[in-house]
Image (tube, rainbow, N blue to C red; front, side, top):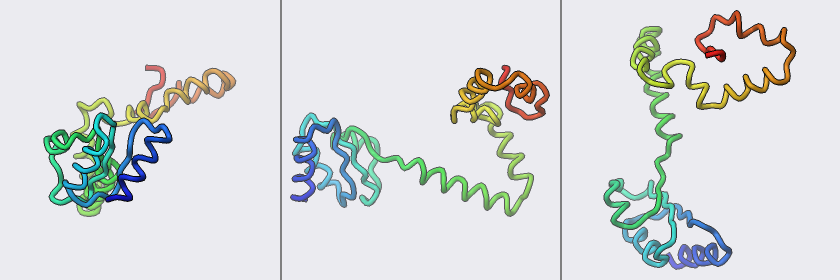
Length: 146
């Protein structure tokens, strides 16, 4: 812990806006870091701390933000979905898509999230008119003219 605190101090001396502290092993270690640097923003990856901390515990300790590991969540959800596909084939995707109908990202609008509309705008700006005809005859679900 002494080395963790020394490094945190060095980063603060170098002018960082937020400390990012990895691999702490306990709630006590988390408290030590937060108490050593009051009024500093601290991100803590506490994935090794078991049982997992609740939102209330993070707030009580005084952590500014913490790891939610969205990539881990996505991987686990994809794995669950792929197992369902292996067992139920097309019914798995059909059922899943049915649950997404009310979502803004339901089918192809997820492309909005990835910046695809900006690509379409660049195409409109720089491609010849003939190249843009693909959007008028597209049979896909994504409608860039909407």
